[in-house]
Length: 178
Image (tube, rainbow, N blue to C red; front, side):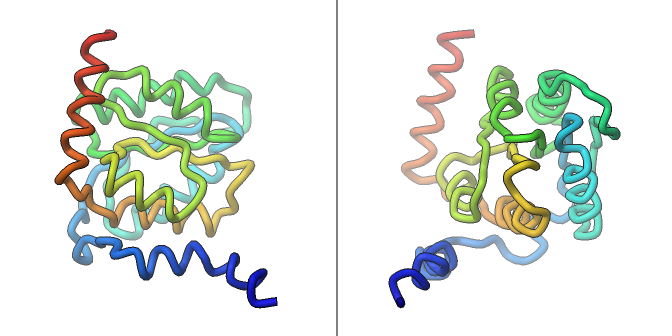
């Protein structure tokens, strides 16, 4: 009985007892976040926009804003360019699965995007990889889980240290294969 219950609390246990670093409250308030979605993700994107705006973040909304079918690469590229060019500090992309958005965003030099589906992945993506574009699957995550992932991702600073050297290696690889 306890074994099956424990697995429900494992993500929370990891977060509370992993030595996770959280930034001081409000450290990133006023941060500018670029948002983008396709037709499968626009409703969740709009809810995330409201959520982050209420918490003091500035938003660049790159669309889409309806259920009319669109091509996700167009929106992933807009958000990735916003981040790479410095118009936004971070980006959040939402499509059906999050996969295609992450693949597309990673084609832009300087972008570190990943499809994130758990709180633990959100934390690690920031601490170890300094992820600057978050991709979410609207057909996979419910609104509450997506908001919690977003909040953890926004609140978790990059830990630097040994991880900085690894990011430099990624940057070098990126530069060698333009």
